[in-house]
Length: 117
Image 1 (cartoon, rainbow, N blue to C red):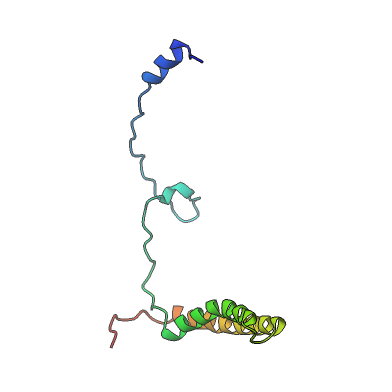
Image 2: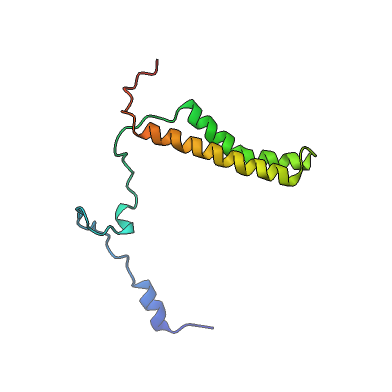
């Protein structure tokens, strides 16, 4: 099926509109922030915080691996289904609570001086 000549001419004459940067407007406190206002801009941390401690990192890793390991143990015949699920629920809530408390305490410590000795 052929298109009318008029449509072909309209397509061939179309040009890309110029992209000019818009004026940057800085929002103040209480202003509404648009979601596209920060597109393509990096996030800058508000203040320096201490990195997670070894204890906090270990708790988070063990908490993340706990469920797959305990469910996998059921398939290898170690423990029964309900016992492993119960252990996973209790241990996950305990480890998660401890990790949250460690993180909360870390947030309120003064920033480190960068000396890692």
